[in-house]
Amino acid sequence: MAAGEPLIGLGVSGGIGAYKAVEVARLLQKRGYRVQAILTRNARKFVGPLTFEAITQRPVITSQFAVGMNADIEHIALATEMRALVVAPATASVIGKFANGIADDFLTALYLATRAPLVLAPAMNTVMWEHPAVRGNLATLAARGARCVGPGEGYLACGWIGQGRLAEPDEIARFVDELVRTAVGPLAGRRLLITAGPTLEDIDPVRYLGNRSSGRMGFALAAEAMRRGADVHLVAGPTSVEPPDVTTLTRVRTAAQMHAAVMAASTKRDVVIMAAAVADYTPVGGAHSAKMEKGDGLTLALERTADILADLGQRRAVTPGAVTPVLVGFAAETGPAEDRAARKLVQKQVDLVVANDVSAEGAGFDVDTNRVTLVSRESQQALPLMSKTAVAAAILDRVEALLAPVTATHP
Image (tube, rainbow, N blue to C red; front, side, top):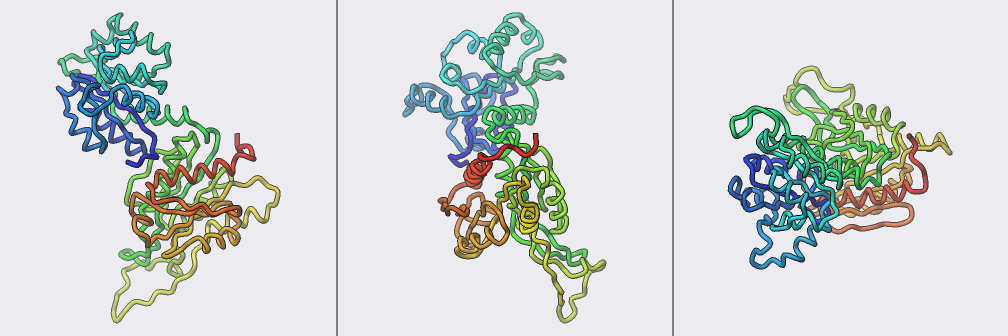
């Protein structure tokens, strides 16, 4: 995971639900977070540190006194950087320690050292959950701002049926993501439309014209915008990776479908970011109804597809003075892309163009990194090779600056 991604501290205490914390870590990473796992001594009796290291690609913290670790510095550094401290499962013991300020291991010391929000996912026997001591400790923590997810009802490890089961991992990850986005929120109240992935232009029932776009860059933008509190409408073509959770998801296949979806949705958006790799050409007359026989060869007649970004810019031009969305385009080239991006900026009447050489090592399609230049009328900002999540953050920083002089267009 890249250093630019927000960090979540995941505390795992000693309960049978500890194995579910592995899935919590994976789901948080899927939403674009780095995860630092902290296992208590009893947690390690249920699940091993190596499992979390394999998932998070980070060393697991298991002790304040591990060899080579300066405990004071380590927990203060983590406490300062992380966006939330999530404890799943949270046993009666760790809840009690948090409530009473007992810091006898790394996790409890970390809680006292951080100002990040605390999210507890309790898991215990029903009678323990209902005990006045546990309820009192939870009330104390709630008064300090702690949030609680669950527990759920069902079969418990002890054989009982009742409340006390750890909340499902997707529920925990979704709660944490929403909490962090709300807490950060520089794009709260803003409505963004983002496109991602390729479009596929059918030739016949078997063949199509396409490109290598995986959707990763557009999805990174959508995930980062959600973390910043935006309302995100994602229009995605057929992608090889799963999209992030967004406010609205519209799936399309062809350039014409993407054009229709974007033009319809863009009138109610503050920002439109065209990160999709939209096909430039489509077969004249549409796809053949039956498979074309190859014979001595196939001849295809192609026509240009509608230029979505140019049409958005043209709509701005014909309504001067009207409040229109900030427009961001992409210029993917095989070679230096800055000059082409500068021309596109003027020709298509947009505010920012993200230029990149897709033939460069580590950049372009179907990889997790990118190297881009942000081209505006005022400047060109070349970014180093970095994760697409970090690139997305840099792009949205510029978008926030473009939005700053105006108020949100839609309450």
